Amino acid sequence: MTAAFAGYSRHTVGLLLLLGVVFIWVDTRQTARKRSRSDDALDIQSTSIDPTPAINASSTQYHRDENIRNRSEEGTALVHPSMANGQAQSSNNDAALEKLTMRETVKLGVAFSILWFAANVTQNASLAYTSVASSSILCSTSGLFTLVIGYVASVEKFNTTRLTAVLASILGVYCIIKYGSHETSNMSMSHSWIGDFLALLSAALYGCYTILLKRQIGDESRLDAPLFFGVVGLANTLLLWPGFIILHFSGVETFQLPHSQSIWAMILVNAFIGTFLSDYLWLLAMLMTSPLVVTLGLSLTIPLSMAGDVLFKGFSVSFPYYVGALLVLGAFIGVNF
Image 1 (cartoon, rainbow, N blue to C red):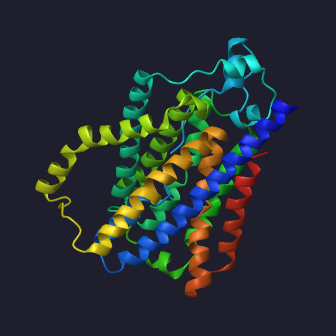
Image 2: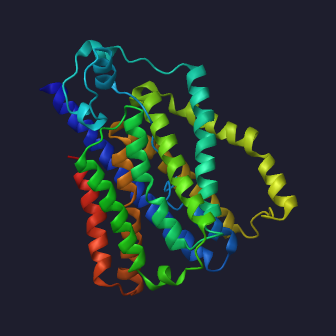
C-alpha cells in the first residue's frame, strides 16, 4: 500500500512539474511575440521556443522503469510506465536502480542533442514553406508518433483509449488554430508539401528523442542532470557550430549579434527560464509520468496562449475554438487514467 501510494504521488508531482513547463512556455512565448512585432530577431527566438512541435518543443524519452524491467525479464506483459508508477514494487528492486555511468550519460547527451536540434530545425524550416497554422497542426501529431514509437520500443501501452486521446488532441489543436484568434488566422501563406513534410518530420523526431530518454533513463534518480545538460550544451557547441558558418556565408540566414540591451536581456532570460529551466522540469515530468502524458500535456500551451489573447487582447473566437480547447484538455485528462 505504501509503495502504491508513493507511485501515485510521484505521478502527481510529475503532472505539477509539467503544468509548470506549460505556464513557462506560454508566458515566455507571449513575451517574445510582443517583442517580435518590433524586432525580427526575437521573432526567430519566439519560434525556437514554440512548444507546439516539440513542441519543442522541443522533449520526452524512452525507458523501462522498475516495473517494466522486472516484468520483461520474467517474460510477462509490458505495463505502461504511468501505470507502473502506481503499482507496488519491492524494496529490493528499488534499491537495485543504479545511476547511469559517465560514458552512458555522454552517449545519451550527444544522441539527444542531435535529435533535439534536428527536430527544432525541421520545425522552424517548415515555416518557410507552409503556413504557421499548417505547421502547428502537423507538429501536434507528435503525440501519435510518441505513442507508436513508444509501443514499438516497449515503453508505451497501445490501446483504443490512448489512441482516441491522441486523435482528440490533434483534432482539438486543429479547431483551436482554425477558429482561434484573428492574429493566428491572418498568419498564413500558401501550403507546400515540403513544409508539411518538414513539420511531420519534426513531430517524428520529437517522438524519437522523447522515447530515447525515457527508455535509457527510466527513473530520474538514475540521471546526473548537471552532467547530462552539460554534455548536451557541449555537444551543441562542438558539433553544430559549423552550421553558423554555412548558413551565414550561403546567405540562408545571416548571423548578427543583438543590437540593443533589451534584446540581450530577453535572450538571456529566455535561455535560462524558457529553455534550461523548462527543459529540466520537462525532463523530470516525463520521467515521473510518461512520454505520451507529457506530449499531450504540452498541447495545453496552444489553448492557453490563445485564451490569453481572448481575455487580455480582446480577440474574438467562434464556438469550435471552445470545442477544440475542451478536446485538448479532455485528451490530456483521459491519457492519465
